[in-house]
Structures are given as C-alpha cells and as structure tokens.
Length: 250
Image 1 (cartoon, rainbow, N blue to C red):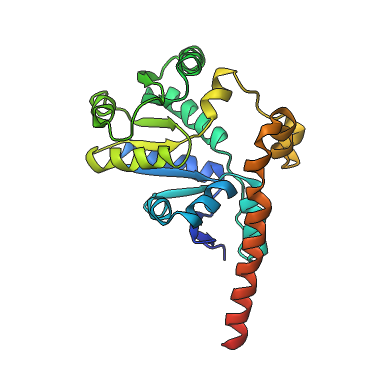
Image 2 (tube, one colour):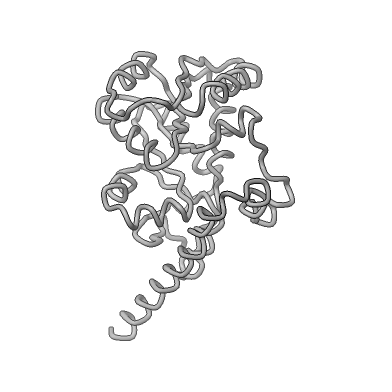
C-alpha cells in the first residue's frame, strides 16, 4: 500500500500524481478552502534542514509537492518511493487551464516588472476566461503588509507567488494568517518561463529527468546551486543508514 505522506530529510511529501493534485486543489478552491502549496526540490529541502524557521513554515503547508527528480531518487533510496515527480511549472499551467474553464480569479505576484508584464500578457492571450484580478512585481519588503491588503482586496481564488524561496513561502504564510480564502502556491522562476524570458528544457531532457543539465549548460553560473543535489543525496544515504541501525537494534 502506497504511503500518503513520504518523509525525506524532515519534510513530508504528498505521494500523489499531478492529476490527483489538480483534482484536490480545484475541489478546495471550489469549496473556498485556504490552501498553502509548497513545491520543493532538493535545494529547498537542504535550505529547510539548515533553517528551522523555514522548516516550520514548510511543515504548515497543506501540500508539499516533489518538484525535482532528486526528491524522487531520495524517496527510492529510503525505500518509500514517491509515485511521480510533479514539476511546479507544469502544475501552475494545469491550474491556469482549470481556472480558465471555471472563470476563476487569479493574481500574479513576483518577478521583475518586465517579466511580470509579459507573463500577464501571456495569461490574457492563452487563458481569456480567467479573471486576472491583479499583478505586482516581487520588489517589496516582506514587512510591508499593504501588499497583503492589496492582494486580498481583489478576492483571488489563486495567487501564484514567484519571489523564490524562502521569501515566497514566508509571504504566503503571512497572507494566509489574515485571508479567509484562496489557494497560494510558490512558483519560483515560473513567470520567467511563462513570459518566454527563459526557455523550458527540451522534451528529451524532461523525459530523461536531466532538466538540471540543460539549465546548467544554459546558465553555468548555477553550478553552486546545483551542488545542493549531491549534498542532498549524501544526506539521504546517511538517513538510510540511521534507519537501518535503528531497525537492527529493534
């Protein structure tokens, strides 16, 4: 029997397919339930491991999605495989498609102004039935509560927050403390792809689960960030050893 939650280095991932996530998230939107979605890759897990305050934020999320093949590999090493990798960008696009069918109210928060405006234009062109109730760039102070007020006044069903971790999760948590409805999801650099500023990896890289390699070829400066993956896998192997030792003692 598949586990509903799969723990990987202290974070419990939801063990669901993208289709299941989509159905559940849309149901929650239709029922006006507040929903906090975290899309976590190895980099985020390693950051959470070193920063307890961020770890506690992630643990408050309603859903933690395995965004990154490293998470899938880690779950297999631990003997509790997650059924499917769900890329945050893909889930965002699926939610936009559903929002377009339902005429949902959507707010875009984050990225540079020119990227944001391009993303806004794409949403208007590709999803004409969405009520795009507002958009704001990511250049604001987290302590500025007027942003929360401005977003809340638009009564959005969905807010995509593209300010990068840990900031986007901190802002979402603050927003949900005062908001009564809405699905909020941190989407990192997804507005860059949506706007056309950055290109998604070619299909062959996605199928082979080596999107990270394509990104590294295109952006060699990411090498330092990419080092989170081998560190993550090393930590997972250490956790596996500790679990084995506990089991042998019992």
